[in-house]
Length: 314
Image 1: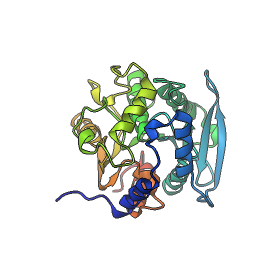
Image 2 (image 1 turned 90 degrees about the vertical axis):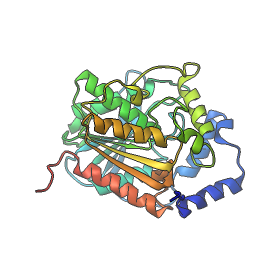
Image 3 (image 1 turned 120 degrees about the horizontal axis):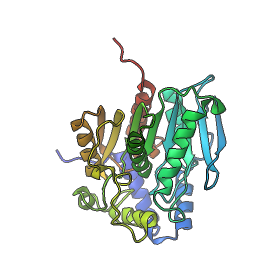
Image 4 (image 1 turned 120 degrees about the vertical axis):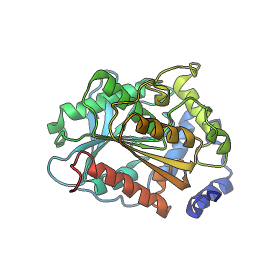
């Protein structure tokens, strides 16, 4: 049976096509950022939580913004959230609605990191910031009202790439590992290496041309860089990584590398839950207000966060 894109998702693509705006990759970086902010920052009243605060995270480079989503009182287990946007666009505001939904349903203290962006800050700046934030959360739980137990990672799109690289780095350093990593349609391998880059090359939120532009911002002229912390699927050893929930979308040029990563993790003995959304496109977690199926997938990811580190029921 031929997969069909969710009609509600297709309607979004139809609206984008009718607008006739130039392709995002043809814009200057600042203009691309402004367009995405206009599209993704939710208008109207936000989903209420016990508390949402911005925290300034000390850094040897520059202070980083960490937005803390508290669904309830008392010390709560933390989860570091890394937003998507090709390492170049988006921020904690564009992903605010998603983070509120994840925090409210999971019961975790969700910490959304506004890491440094390309091209002003190229690889490995994003990984360095994520590592700093993760270790700070573990070392300073009392500063933010976290309990320090069962930390989790959640990465969306390019943030999923950074989260996967961070999990590898933590393992290699012998540092405390997260109780769970959730990777939503992550980039995991070199550009254009898998058939889905051709099969899903055009017509979706993320296409082949835009992915190439994003990598150009991140790497400049060094696009042949060999680095398993940037391309985790190329790593020789994927054993010893934390339990993983990996979400992939059928209508996504990154589909095949996500599926391959889930298989490789499972083959090395890592506990993996692979959720393939056969009717969705890249970026579906940001469409929870307008695509019913996307909302259910957000809830599924949040439920995995809630369960992480807890003993299984008898």
